[in-house]
Length: 299
Image (cartoon, rainbow, N blue to C red; front, side):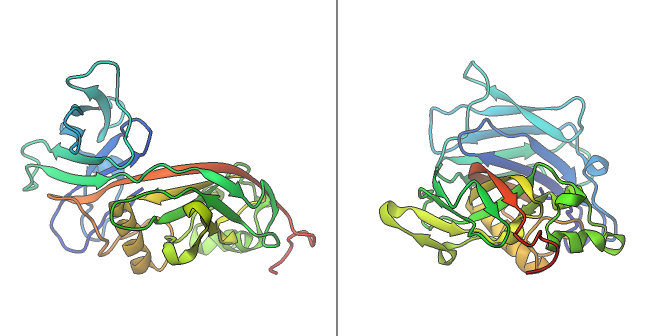
């Protein structure tokens, strides 16, 4: 997530963060303050309590307002309580729906903001039709996935691919990841950090459109840091999420969220900073095998 908000400038701002997943229940919302210039952002230290948080779909009149309540065990974390005019729990996020988030911070907090608002349009759901295999050899086999098209108003689909290693041990590190880990005395990289990776944003020019509009995406092997079982997740990005990631990657020259300042990223929060994003996701399991030479060095 947005683990490091230290925007350029000295003005304190509220930071709001929430991610809507197509077909899933409404998500929690995190609210905090930016860190002063020169200080490290820590959510627990900057959490904001006592806010009024609500969310609703704005392109469907029958949808009720979903109000949020703060988690009593986690200051600054607000969870959905269900729509005010419907019974039966929290509704699910509808594909292609437009949602509006409104946050009213507590009075007397010293930040001149009455309300934070943001809107996001959720990408359409999609599904996997084919993969290059559920057991592949690292950097020897092709790593590709074919999916149905994820519709989005006004533009083609944009994706990121992430990988979560199920057995993140030193022995299972691929050679490139092992090099990074062995430099941990200077770079501070941990096995836990290496276990989750994310590709750069994949645009239309980086995937092939086949029969029936199906999309084939060649996944870079750099997303696999560990041999053994991995979970591959392919996310179709809403516009806010896409803008945030692509601008962050340009600024940092990397492809993952990382500690430190996030300078000049594209945000779409009125009255504050942060990210109200949305996505649709599919996942599959992949067993990554060692190459025939044992993987004991760079190809």
